[in-house]
Length: 396
Image (cartoon, rainbow, N blue to C red; front, side, top):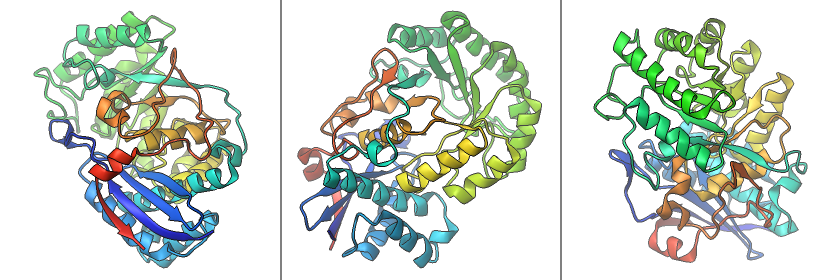
C-alpha cells in the first residue's frame, strides 16, 4: 500500500467563532492510498489562534511522505521528526502537524485490517469510559448561561448531575464578576475579592453536587506559582479531584513547588509535547494526572508511549480533547486500552450542533460514560458535505 495524496482540510463548521474572540475551525488531515482507503486525523488546534499555522505545517509535512507505506507509521513519524530540522525542536505547531498525519495513518491501519484501532494497540482494559462534564458545557453549549454567581455554578452542577455525570470540571476564576472571560490579572498574588469569589463558586458546586461528586479545578495556566498556591490552599477544603494547569508547564520545577505546597493532585499536559517534554514531570513526580492531546502530542504513536511511560511512575491519564469529533474518536480508542486511564474530557464543544454535524457519527456519553467505537479504524469521518464546503489543500 502507498500514500497517493493527502488533503489538509480547514473544517467549515458554519460558524467562525465558538466564543467571542475565539476562532473554532478544526483542522483535519485526510491521507489517501492506492487501495482506496482514506484515513482521517485531526490537529489539536481548532482554537487558540494557531489553526492556520497547524494547517500549513501539515501541508509541509505531507509533501515528505507521498509514496510511503501508510502501515509504517513508526518510519513516517521518525522521518518527519528527524529529517525536517525543526521536528526535533518540537512545539505546538510542529507536533500538531505530526499528530494529524499520525492519527490518519492509524485510521488507515484499522480500516485495512478491518478492526478498531484499540485492537491494534493491545485491546480493551476499560469496557466503558467515565466522563466528566464541564461547567462551561452549559455556559457555551446548547444552553447559554453566563457563569458569574455561585448560583450559576450550582446550576451548572445540577445540570451535570441531571445528565448522569458524577464528576464536573469548574474554572472558578476565568469569568470576572462582570461576566468577562479571562480579563482579570491572575498572576503574582490574587486579590482577596478574587479568592473569595472563587471559593464561593466552588463551595456552591460542592454543596449542589454532594460529597460523592468529583470536582476538577481548571485554571488554564492563568495563575502562576504564587497565585496557584495561594488559591489552591483555599480550595483544599472542598476535596477536589485534581488541580488542572495551575501554571504554565515550561518550568517543571515550578509545578513541583506547587505540588509540594498544595494538597490537591496536579494535572497538566495539553501544552506539553512528546516523550521528551513529559520526561521532567515524570521524574520529579509533580503531576498525578497527565493530559496529552493526541492532536498535539505526536498522535496515537507518541501518545501511547507517553501513557505507558506515565504508568511506570503511577501517573494517571485524562486525554485532553478540545476539537472536533475526529479528535474525540481517536482519544476513545487510546483510552480504551491504557490501564492508567482516569476519566474522559467531555468538552462543551462536543455538544455544539455544527461540530457534531461535521462528521458522520455522533458519540456521546450515556449516564456519564462513553463506549468506544467498534468501527474499523478510529470510527469517525468527515461528511462529504463538510469536505465540499471546507477550505483545503491537496498534496500529490
